[in-house]
Length: 185
Image (cartoon, rainbow, N blue to C red; front, side):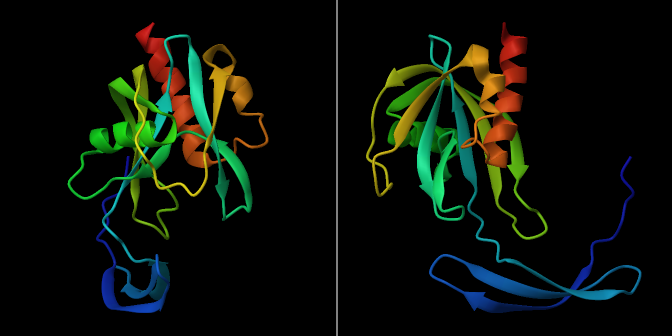
């Protein structure tokens, strides 16, 4: 059971660094016990994202391999992207599927909303399972063609040992999708 606490009071907030994409904010906080600390975080943008575990009628997972500048290597994961202004999470999920793997989904089931590193980021990502896929391609914003990797659903747990499959959000989505799909059988 969670203990109810008052949130810290924000004494001061200042943007201390920024780039074309990010703003880093310094916050001076006072906790309810009187302790004061300075924290840094990415300034909240208000934009959230989606990640989809697409499952084909043949029982395959569809993954993408794309370059990730943070790790400076190609990573294997599920289609994902930001929710555009005016879009719902469901609309964004279907758009991302069409842009990244060339399929839409007749059925999208939300699994969970997750936060990556809440000490530094406020962005939320809704994880989905996409089923009843149909071919449809939209132009995406990727700088190069994404490699689509089919992985048998029956061997999904082996995916966890794959060296290129290391992103925490994709791993979380896989576990939640397997749980959901097992209940659906």
